[in-house]
Amino acid sequence: MIFQSLMKIIQRIVKLMPTSFVTFFKRNPKLTALYSRTLVKSGLFYGRPSTKKLEILTKELLKKQSEQFRHNQNKTSNDFSLLIITSSSDIDACLEMLLDLDSPSFSKILFFCATEDVEKVIQRIYSSPITNLKWRVSSRLDGLVDEEPILVINNDDVLVSSFTTLISKLTSSSVDVCYFDRAFYSTNGEFVEPELYPDWNADLQLSTSYIRTCVYFAKGKYLLSSFDLEPSKHFVANWMINNFFEQCSRQVHHIPIIGVFSPPEPSESLKMTRELLKYLLAQANIEDVTERGYIRDIQWKIENEPLVSLIIPTYNGKDLVEQCVKSILSLTTYKHFEIVLVDNNSDDKEAIAYFHELSNHEKIKVLRYPHPFNYSAINNFAVSKCNGEIIGLINNDIKVITPQWLEHLLCIVLREDVGSVGAKLLYPDNRVQHAGVVLGYGGGAGHAHKFFPRNHDGYLSRLAATNNFSAVTAACLLVKREDYLKVGGLNELDLTVAFNDVDFCLRLLEIRERNVYCAIAELYHFESISRGADDTKEKSERFQKELQYLRSTWRTYIEHDPAYNQCLTLKRENFAIVDSSEYIHAISELTPQ
Image (cartoon, rainbow, N blue to C red):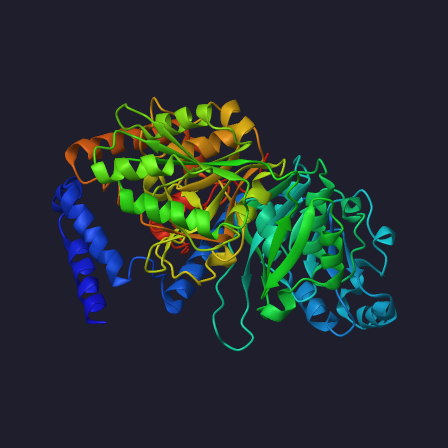
């Protein structure tokens, strides 16, 4: 506690320093590295804002969005329907919400409920003042929806003022399906943090059903699917999952605007239904589905047990390599793999002798790369010499924790839609080192939830649940060999050390739909022990050059990472809501084209 208090004082002093002094400080690599290491040890670096601060930031965000609604408000037509998933016991609050709307932009209200609730819901509506609006009640979707656009919400949602004018705008766009962020109203006086979503994140939906309400459909008939959807709070979530497996041409869009306030949801209510479990297990490519609380872990089928080539570059580092190799050989339950150790100019006699010893192992191939260190070139060289259908890029400072780590990663990367998959990497003290990469941090890229405790759920459970990120780290990454070659491997000309994995993953997104962070494949990562930190002038200059390449090449992703949310901060890797200084980055166009 004393150490933390001291670091808080130092942080305040740094903020009060003249800009010129801070600039000088940042240009000194050793001073910057010392300050960063000390801040990390204090435990303050990953700390998120207090509940009180988050409440203030949320109010500011809602105020800013309200201003933008007013700024973009113009004459709209009532050309969409509002579909409410309801029941007879919950209809009253819903009717009150409808009466409180300033100027509804929808043409009619459709109530979707269970068969036994239909008559009761109709009676409640007749006794309320909303009878001046057009409405229908049914227990059958095909009796409710048609070609008209539709907005789906749950019966206890409260629409944000003027939000329906945005929906009316969407009706004239080419958007098929669109979802929005949401906030929560308190039922006991306690603040609940809003949910600010990434753009369509298929694996997060499969893991957590993060989209559960407030979804726009260009045509109501899109709701009719092969999955028999019942009128429950799982309706929207299950439709989204069904849409993923049906591989429909309907693209799912996202607008980072809060559309509804919902009541807080107990974790029990988030667990998958028996119907969803049955549906998932019926999919041809799913082996098994298990739950950790409300988080689902899907084991995809592995056909024909492909050979995985685990490429491990090293310069000396005998103890690290021994720890890494022994953990892989002794703990890994998937056995059809080979280790390709690439010796890059090692000069330590002990290390050289150990590598020679390893070369006699039936599962290990030792290659020599007698050229200056170039991480990208080393891996490209190794890929040309190995035999695996699947390529694994592995750092020499990795140690296996989860025996099934390779199965967990392999079953995901074999999917047709996946480019690469990365593991959850931990520092030796069980803080998070890697759990997906977010573009935009520091004007470049950074690790999501860095320094968070190992068992923390993270924002939207994205630390504990398998989900999509634009990139993952090559410290432990799997990719199909054909994809590695198709995108030209790692960039050995412009990115010899830093950001080559980020650049590689983004190029994979040009031929595949998504990259995946696998939360249940855990390994330790003793980061930068073998190569060292970028704290010399030469290394710092090289890093800045590679950072500039990333910024110029992938500017679009850095300005808006689709796996993040524009209303979340880029100042720290902790998913906090933006403050006023970042609103220029947070608020963009209201509607996609």
